[in-house]
Length: 179
Image (cartoon, rainbow, N blue to C red; front, side, top):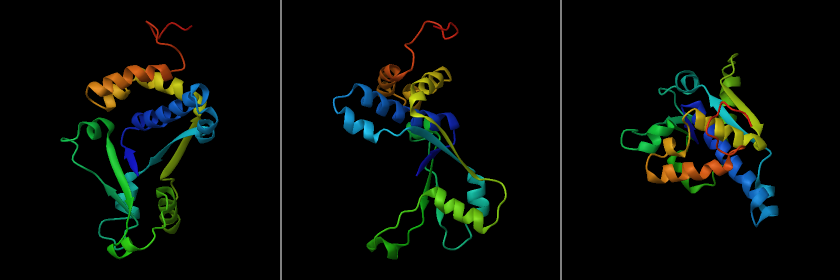
């Protein structure tokens, strides 16, 4: 699973997907099929990576259930801009020929959290109705989060201009004047 160490970036990806699905459901040709696929809520998961790395699944432990994987950001402008971090379930070489029973990260973390009898929550799920996705995208743009900043390059700028059509309100000259 991919994560961001920047909460607003996570909110961007959740709201962008929800806004696109919502717009397709209300405007698109395949209205009925897309409307079924559109989720009523969008969500962002928060995970205490320090707890995962140091307490739940320390490197010296055998049979790790969850790995936290990072990649060099200097050579990948998208990964750098997005604050990318990855988690994966441990699968042994012997298991590659067997069907994989995929468990979600929240299931693995919850199981370890209960096993260690940890009292403070280490994972949270924040949700909003998908109908709010356009508003979230517009507000994130005001905070400097858009396709232009998360996908450095010409395509990111073009995508940023196009995603304004997903906003809840048309672009205005000033965000301080309500309409």
